[in-house]
Length: 161
Length: 338
Image (cartoon, each protein chain N blue to C red):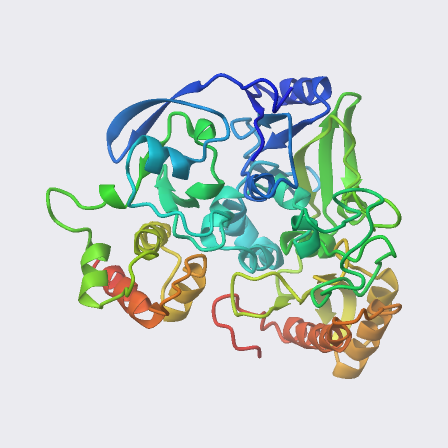
């Protein structure tokens, strides 16, 4: 039964930022912990670890999700994009550049999640104005209160995409 | 989180077999609520049965003119499905009022129906809770109960159901299709969630070994005169203090059909057939809406901190019915309440 015998690690394959990665994981390993502790991709942040702050947001098969509430074994075969995978050939992703242009962070801890979430938002194509950006970014908290600049940065990236 | 075994179900029959073989097993699809509860040690399954790859993602027309929605359709896909947006905008609106974009991408329709209360005492394993440990007592009744139920509660439990989607489904008269060891059956959404009574640990009518396969919504869609208004402590990404789903059929200013359901106030979406009947044949006026609100809120009981919800609910019901009658539904992005 659980707690007395430890299940065996389960082999899974992920494509992380375009690279194939084979892992053996215990079933309770979250995607967040697999990325940070096994693949050493520490750009994705553990904030609340309960799906309330959005700092752990990554793209799974192109859709933004909370990696802290995702079991890695359930995503066998999936394509994962983290903040480390957004820049291409040394050029920042338009959202990364826009966050710099608009000074859209203070401490920066929420920023990888904000940018991955905004990348998901742009791909969804549902936000048309600042109110809609605010609503569809409400799953990403910024305790420094950088929201006006975050919205401005996303508006810039949206207008150029 | 406790250690657990993991199985991937190959089909619905396999999921039922795995579930029946291990009484401590739980199904997992989106996992947004279950993983969170496991991190708090509120849920400690011996095995997780991964159903996320089962082919339950179709949205199909039914012979009767309604829609059958597979249990694994993600909440966001349902809200943004063209048929839902055009024919069932009340459902789309309610789904978009809930959670965050990330969680809606993950959460399944079936999981949304199965999500558990967000009562803080249910989550806090250091406090007594009848829902978590039957017979332990309820910490909310004499505790911080500002968010708790005003309708249908018991002396065992005053928790509320947190779903927005279910409130719209209740108003639309949805059905829940389940499969289990003894075959398939259909449960009216109105009967799917239970009142707490003296068994608050039982949230739903789902039996052991049963799995939700689909929900079905009838053809009557109320696409013109509807609104979903959610009142909460911040403008987005918070559970409802009170929410209202209102749907009307009008001939001129006369109401020919009315549906009303409340969220955030009870252990299940709260409807009153009497309140809805009282609106039929009446003019769409604030006075008639106020009377319906009084009927819907009959028996509302205040606890030490949540008395404000009764008047809040009354005003929200009238406001939502006015929005529905004037075909100006509440926007879930532009927050000004018309």
